[in-house]
Each structure stands twice: as structure tokens, then as C-alpha cells.
Length: 71
Image (tube, rainbow, N blue to C red):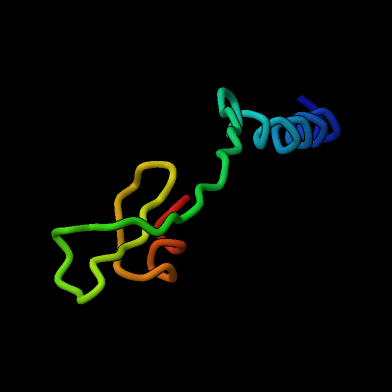
């Protein structure tokens, strides 16, 4: 194999390698959940309110924490 053929072969391998890494990958864009204020009787706060993620990821004491956890 001549050096020019070897060079072309290496270039082809370098170009095709990134395609191998993404084989079978599916990109799914999930809908952003929202936090809703609800009454949580098990909560140890005075007003018994909490914020629950609409995508059913649980409830949290503050809206800021809920927004961080809610995808």
C-alpha cells in the first residue's frame, strides 16, 4: 500500500469514526414540568403547603427547590 493510499484510508477512518459514536441514539425532548402549590398534611410547616411537580416527581417545601427538581 502506498503512502497516499494509506493517507486516504486514515482520513476516511477519521471522518467515519464520529458517525459510529452516534449510532442508535434517539433524542427525545421532554416537556418541562411545572410546580403547583398544594396542601401537604405530612409537612411540618405552619401552613402545610408544598409545591409538587406536574410530571409526578414529588413534592418540596419551596417553589425554588421544586423548580430545580422538576424536569
